[in-house]
Amino acid sequence: MVDARRAEMLLRLLKKEVVPAVGCTEPIAVALAVAKAKETLGTLPERIEIATSLNIYKNGMGVGIPGTDKVGLPIASALGAIAGRSEKALEVLADVQPHHVDSAQKYIDDGHISISIAENCDKLYVKASAFAGPDCCTVEIVGSHTNIVSIKLNDQVIFHKEQEAEEAKDDEAYETTMDEIFEFAKTQPLEDIRYILDAAQVNKELSNYGLAHRSGMGIGATLLSWISRRKLNDDFSNYAMALTAAASDARMSGALLPAMSNSGSGNQGITAMMPVLATAEKLGSNEEDVIRALILSNLTAIHIKHGFGRLSAACGCVVASTGAACGVCYLLGGNLIQIKNAIKNMIGNLTGMVCDGAKLGCALKVASGTSAALQAAILALEGVGVPGSNGIIEDDVERTINNIGTIANEAMNDADRVILNIMLSK
Image 1 (cartoon, rainbow, N blue to C red):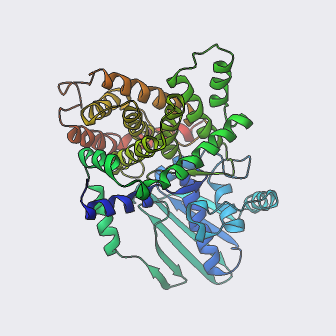
Image 2 (tube, helix red, strand yellow):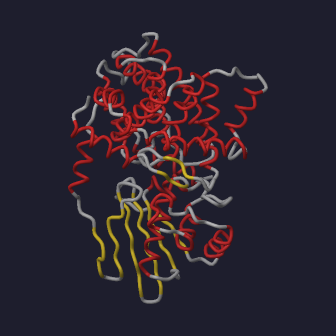
Image 3 (cartoon, rainbow, N blue to C red):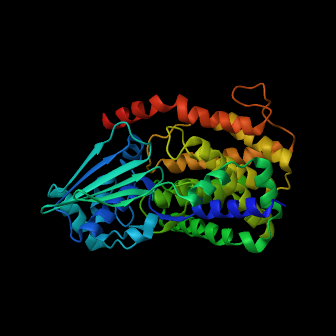
């Protein structure tokens, strides 16, 4: 077993990074900052000025906003001011009703909101300044989607966040390895980790909604329809693709249901969990194996994502589906060596998938990641692993994980602005 101190840190890390979120987390971060500014002012602002990092701006342009049939940062911002509740964090817009949407649209049409791209800031950055009469409240979020670091009312700083001892402990927990993650997932007492089943059920309900309502582009519903009509084989891969894509369909189209996120992303949480649940259903896996596979998948995704940073031009689907490959491999009886080979197979396959903003089409990438995860797991079980002489793959899986993080953090920085310029020129 993992020693008690490390186990406690990993449990805390899981509970920090695997949390419910209603809607895509980038516009939700903007809504959260606006809601906090409005609450601090104590009245609906006459004007709101928002500045975000390029990554937040890109991911907020085309994604559905919860409880609406609309997309983009303006409606998310307006709803944050009109119906947002900051104490709900990533579920800040959970209470949105149709009349709120009408009021928010009028608020936008009347010119109360302006949005710009901030320069020389963290990749995850939101600044919301709300004005009412002579008063101005400014709220800043930096580094993670709910990390409010500053609140100013006029010239007075009423909240400023410094690095805390608990955060330092969390940083230590991120410095884990696949050996430790596998041991933790395999041996930690079930009563400590059973809650992950409830977390996964949140995403299953989102998948069910996407299938029932043919949400978004209907990718999951279409795949499942073809399976039911026997135009596609009812195998592990196709079934997992359908269920996983359906959850993303629902989330990206603005379903007013939570996703259980991973590392600040609902789609990553969906992709880390739904392929494991779908495979377990096909296998008839027992509850303990499902719990341990879900823990393995989620911790692997957190481990890899930490090297990426919160936001990047590299698609987070690669991270989450690599976690899923490990979880599926475990369900199929895989050992640590085979799980490490599954990681190498995924990184050797999907590295280079770009993030061109949050949108309905993300469900296609989720489906592709799911298919690749099943393939990677099966190949690993048969002794197939991309050799260390290939490209960015190394014999040491931790060095391989570091390599993909380096690509996401360094090699793809220029890609972010190029992608956004293409999106803005349409």
